[in-house]
Length: 463
Image 1 (cartoon, helix red, strand yellow):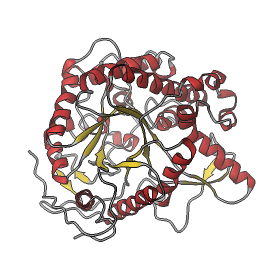
Image 2 (cartoon, rainbow, N blue to C red):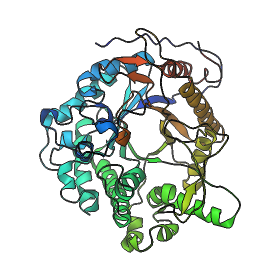
Image 3 (cartoon, helix red, strand yellow):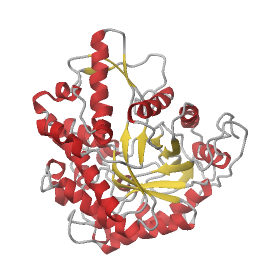
């Protein structure tokens, strides 16, 4: 077992969250597992993308990442020490179905069965995301998410995993952040598979939502618990009262937020998407939007920042350019620290779509961390302050009547941060990627206090 300093919670008085509030942390498969081709697994689009020169900072890949595939027991022990009640993980589709469909790879499935059993033995509830961006490369060779058959592929994969694990897993997520998949992977080309086509992005966005609906149907056929969707949301705030800025903010909101929620909850796409996509918009999507609407059991919201925007014709594709706020703090990702936006976006979801149960499924920040010292807790005061302010914002949403049932810190471990490689650190546990040594940060201690006190420690400094 890798060694790490002890994390001993210190309980202090403060704001208390509802009983049975679910406190967790989150990761994703390609970002932490490593061993992407081990035991018969098939390559993913991210394995292919990361091994393409010039795609990822410093030529980094997820071949080792946090070596979680081989160190899962140690990582679960660390979660137990922190007092996590839940752990949100994702399944690598290609570990289960190396060709994306057809033959099931039993050793790959067995890895997740062992991981789930380890979590349950430590009284940690597994929350499984079926898709966190790592489409099997074999399916990309057949068009990937551009292929209309992708919805059926995803449903078949979901059925395999659900039949294997639903007896032990009670919370399921279909997709993580479909906006990022479409925008980063098909508009800007900075994420796998690296395309740059607005027309492709429009089709992919629609097929992802069709896949979500198909997976929900597959789950209802064999699953017995709860299934939902996870989206990343940002308030889109106009920089002024000028009508051009207000219209730009509306287009940005339609593209970023409503594009992935209106079809799921209302059965329609926002009309503003016709302006955003122009001739690239697939008109059949408007007609098929009603087929995406399905009752889901919960919605997961990933929140990191807001956008203040002004009209800017050069800002592709929405014509809404971000305006940096001169008096705000920014993270290492150059994202504004704006905790009130979490309250705002949770209330917006409730007001627009009704009293759906919500979880904050990701929230966290990348900041430069100081060097680690053997046996010492690593101090990360900016991250602690970020978590404290955003947890206060989450509590404010509950006080405003939002049915918020849990919170998942992003991320448990410093991981492979996609096209940034290992240059950005979101973890509450530091990972030395040369030695794989885990060192809890002060933010891990802070979060352990929060969990132990059910939020009562948030309003006070901790020692």
